[in-house]
Image 1 (cartoon, rainbow, N blue to C red):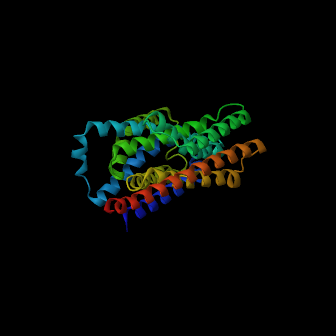
Image 2 (image 1 turned 90 degrees about the vertical axis):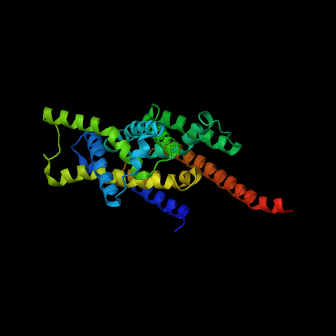
Image 3 (image 1 turned 90 degrees about the horizontal axis):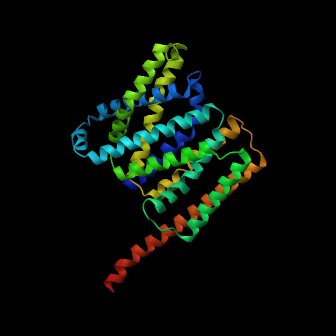
Length: 305
C-alpha cells in the first residue's frame, strides 16, 4: 500500500477513536479527572512497550539519546498533551462534551494562526476570511456562555501545539510515545502513590471491571496517538487538517444525541459560523493544493519546451 494512502487510513482510525472518547471516560467514574489522567499516563507506557517488544524494535533509543534537541521537543510534547488529556477528561466528565467538540473544530484555525505568528507563513485572503469567521463564532459563543469558551480554546491550543511539536520532531510513532510517557511516568506514579497513601484511590476498590477500564485507558490512549503520529509522518498537514474534522463531528453527535446537552439557538448559530469557517478553510486548502499539483505537473513540460 502506498505510504500516503496508509497515512490517510491511520488518520481516519485515530480521529474516529478520538471522536468516540466521550463514551469511554464516564465509564471510569467515580475516579476523578486527575486519577484517570495518572492511570492514562502509566498504562499508556505499558501499552507502547508491549508494542515495541512485539516488534523487537529498540535500536532507535540510542540514536535518539544522542539528539538532545529531539528529546527536548518530545518532553515538551509530553507536557502539552498532558494538559490536553486532563482538560478533555474534565470536560467530558463534567458535561461539557459539546464545548470539547468546539475545541477540536477550532483547532484547524489555531494551526493557521500558529503558522502566521510562529512560522512566519503568509495567509491567503480566504484563509483570513476563515480565521475572521472563527473569531466571530468564538465571540458569539462567549456571549452565549457568559464567559469565553475556555475549555474549547484550551483544547484547541494544546492539541494544535502538540501537532506542531510532533511534526518538527519527526520521530516515529511508537518511539515518540515511549519517550513522552517516560517523561510523564514519575508524576503519574507519584500522584497515584499519594492517593493510595491518603486512602482515596479508586483502583481496585470498585470491582475488577472498573480496574480493567482504568488500565484500558492506556490502550485507548496509545493506539490513536500511534495512529496519529504515523499519519502525521506520512501525509501533508493539509490532509491531517481535513481528517481531524472526523473527531469533533463524532464528539458533537455524542454530546447532542447521547449526553443530550442543551443547545439553545444562539449556540447553534455559533457552531454554524464555525462550520462555515471550516468550509471556507477546506475549500481554499483544496483549491490551493490543486493549483500546486497543476503547476508541478506543468513544470516538466515547460522545462522541455
